[in-house]
Image (tube, rainbow, N blue to C red; front, side, top):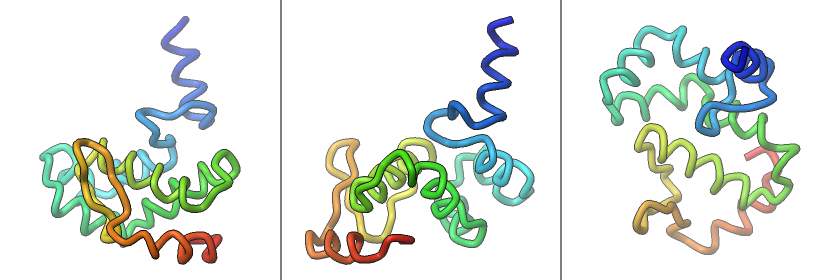
Amino acid sequence: MTASTWVILFTTEVITLGGVPYSVLMKVWQDPTARSALLGGDETELHDLMGGLGIEYDIKEYYRDRIEDPVKLDQHIHQILFDRTGYVGEAYTVRGRTLVLKDPGKIEELRNCPNC
């Protein structure tokens, strides 16, 4: 009973798996190259594929109504991707296990780009 409830909540995107919504996980799973990179732990290949698949954008769309501040939203999404795949966005650097913006000037750019 508990497992079926969790599956229903996950597939209807009420809850996520490690911060990743069902639709995004399925997008990766249905792409043979991305699936192979994910299962094989190939962080470089998975990183390269994410842009083409629109993964970052899709996760942002899921969280956009939950996290209104675009800077916090961007950092949250990149942290999820880093935690799950080792992906470090171009604008970020790793301190410990936390991503931080390399350039504090990027904050204004993120605030002024609502769909970034």
